[in-house]
Length: 106
Image (cartoon, rainbow, N blue to C red; front, side, top):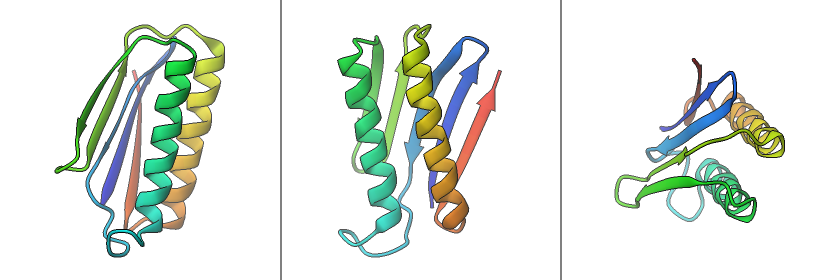
């Protein structure tokens, strides 16, 4: 199962973390993995283009990505991350045995 953890506070999103293999299908044919991977890559690219300070941890063997925003007071960035969060929640609703989304608001 893939787990996506998203951390948010009153000012906006703080981090997101994706871990694990979904197990929906074999490598190269797994639509759940492809959905999460492509959405996550898009978000990282958008953060780079908005020049948002963030750190990125990647471990391909463990299927692990963690993105921590250094400071996020940008309404546009928060709107994009809202979209990412909704998308991941929607995919997890369709494939609950393969994807879990955990949103924590502090």
